[in-house]
Structure formats: C-alpha cells, structure tokens
Image 1: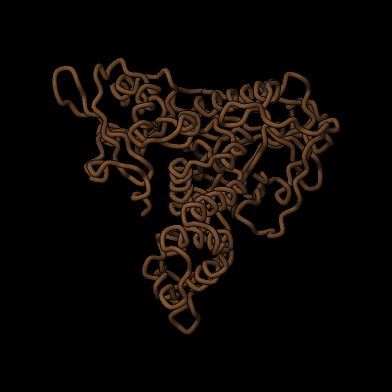
Image 2: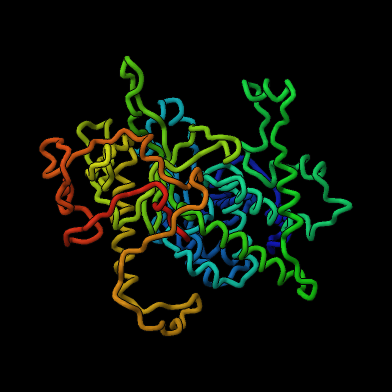
Amino acid sequence: MEGDRLPLPPSLEERSQRSSISSTGPRTLDVVVYLINETEVRLTVDNLPSATALELHRLVRDALRLPECALEVFSLWLVSPLLELQLKPKHQPYKVCRQWHELLNRFTSGSEYEICEDEPSLQLRRNVFFPKRKELQIQDEGVLQLLYEEAKYNILEGRYPCDLADCEMLGALVCRLSLGPCDPDRHTACFLKEKLDSFLPSHLCRRGHGLLSALWKRGARPPAYEQGLLHAYQMVPEDQACEENAALQIHYHAYLQKCHELPYYGCAFFSGEIDKPVQGILHRGGRKAVSVAISLEGVYIIDSKEKLSVSVSPGQHVLLGLHFQELSWDHTFPSEEEHILWLEFDGENEGTAVNKLLKVYSKQAELMSSLIEYCIELNATVEGAPQEDLDGSPAPPSKPQSPPTRRQPPKLQRQNSVLCSRIQHLSTIDYVDDGKEIRRVKPRRTASFFGRQLSSTPTSYSAVRGSENLEQG
C-alpha cells in the first residue's frame, strides 16, 4: 500500500514465489530479502555461504537507502509457517537454512510432511532488543514506514490483541496514511466497507455463519465497524500548515505510539500449549494452544482461539501478562518430546495468597527460557550504562530521582479489555510454604521452586491482579 514511498528500484516491486536463495553461477548466489509487506529486495552476493547476517543486513540497508540507525532498529529473520528465528549479526543465514529441517525437528511439533515441505524466507523485521523509547526519536521516513508496516501487519493479522476502540483509532490512521486527509464526499462508510480488511483486523471483517449470523438475519443488525472507523477517520487531526511529508511522520509516530500501549508490541512469538481448567462433572481437561510473547519487559500468554463479546473485540486476548520482576521461571524436559517452560508468580486462591505455577508445554521452551534470561541480562546492562540517543550522543541528564519503587500501573478503565489478564481461565498449580505440599496458608514471599529470577536476591512479589497487570508502553 505504501511501497511507493520507499526508494526501491522498479525490479524490487516484482513479486515471486517465496524462496530466499537461488543460484546464479558457480561463485555468486541471488538472495531475496522480504519486507513485511512482501516487497522483495534482491541481492547478488559473492561467497554467500560465509556471509554473515550483518553483512547482508548492510546490503539491504544500502539497497533501501536507509540511515545507519536501521542496523540497530531492524534484524534479519528466518521465517516459515513453523518457526521464526531472529538471526544474530554473526550468524551465517545460508548455513542456518541448510540446517532448517534439523531445527524444525528440534523446536517444532510439525509432521514429517510439514517439515519436509517447510522452507524459510529471509525477512527484515524489527529487532526484538530495540527499546520502544528509541522509536519515537526516529525521524527518517523510510525507517518509520517499515516500523509502521510491521505494526500494521501484526494488528491486521490479529497477532496483537487489540480492543475495538483502539482498532478503530489505529484503522483511522491507516486510512489517513493510505488515502490522505478525510474527504467527506469521497470517503463514506460504503467506501471504507469495500476495503475494510485493509484497515481493521481480519476477525472484525468476517461475517459469521453461525448463531450470531442467524440472529442478525432475524432482525438484529450486525456491528457496522465501518461506521466507527469512519468516525475515527474524521477525527484524525490535521495541520493545514504542515507539508505532507511532515504530516506523514506525525501520523507514523502516532500509530507507533498507540501500539506502544500494547504490552506485547515488538515481542518475539512462540507457540505452545497450556492445561485447560477441569470442567464439568466428568472433570474433562485437555490443553489449549497459546502464543507466548516475550519482550524486553516481560512474558505474555495469549489465547488465540477464545472468543469474547463482539462489543469488545472477538479475537485473541491475554491470559497472563508478567513483568520480569513478577516471575521466576525454569525450563525442564522430563522427556525428549515434552519440554516445559515453568512460570511462577503470586496470586490468590479463594482469597488466600498463594504462589502459582503455570506449565507451558512447547518444544520451543528452551528458546523461550534463553530469551528471558538474555532480556534480563540486557536490561541489567542497559540500566548500568549511560543512555544515548540514536545518533550516539549522550541523552540529556535526567532529573534526580527518588529511590526506585515498584511501578503500580493504574487500573484499566475497560475491565473487559483484551489486555486484562484472565488468570481464572488458567489451570495452575497453587502451593504455599516450600512447595512440598499445597496448604491454604499465606506463603513466605521468598519461597520459590526456581532460582531463576530477575536478580539473585530474594524477590518480593505482589499479587498479580487482572486489572493492574498491564504494561503502559
């Protein structure tokens, strides 16, 4: 939609089948790096088997004519339907591709046929370790557009759970960036309805065929999301004295800033399963599929199949969100096929304070545990170092601060928000004291099964409540 604003040669606009590497001769290979909107960046690389991700990244940056900061903002990823891996600068993508099926066997539960047919593509995506606070310092339009396109993709695909009101606000900014300022004569609700899936998440654009659809046909009116989108589009602020390029930057920043309110913005995503709470007289349980999102701030368990009221947003929602200072974790593998990521946090059971253990079953548990550990170490390093702006200059000195205290985010205004943790939907192991037995007494707050925490000193948790456990960006 916005590809014409990127300084791409005409050949980069052509689409082809997803394949990142092809041979052009005995010594050179063609490499295709995909942007999030499927635009292709074609590179011809000498001695590709020994080329590092950083070297390819520089070639992509030069092809797109992006500034030096793009090397910090973005990373190269290998992505397929079964697995997503952010490459380290020293990784050699060609060699990782050659080992792809081994990685799939190790980290996924795909069938033999799925693994055999799976092929990764090399993509330029946001760097998981790039701090959100630095995004709003970016002024280059090309970098901003790439960040915007990726955030928009994750919203439209439903990867980032989002309340309906926020979907409409973000969709309105997409309208402004792709259609220009709102023209009442041209941009009507009917006009937007024809392209609704370009502005709103896919689950809001589908018209169901089940019970709700049958009820609507009997006289009730289905939700007209295009009306709310149009109203939000009309409310997008415009500065008549501002040139269009400057206006685009303002709207890119506005979109990204709104996405920063989503705690899982910029996360790496993994697949897993958790136990369902036992229900019914037959005590049936089972497991449900979840996404595990991990960022520099914490861990989020997202249910991709649970449906909420259409007044909220019938799509994904957060089951559990924890900052690193609120959890302990560990990775175990009692069997080769049953890797488990354990998350321990504080909660309540029938009004009694208890420690809760959540088991996430996933062959990617090892990757999750390693990323959690690295994020904590990286945060500790950053906190002890002087802050710098994107251009490398020292950031302005901050005002003297009072001794650090644990942040208490304000309670959500929308108590049924998709961002609220729904701990009641989790099947957890509740324990007190030293974990040897389950007793309904107040536990010692320093008791923990796991020694892997934010720091080596005893961590004092506070109860995790659904109305308070929200990253505020």
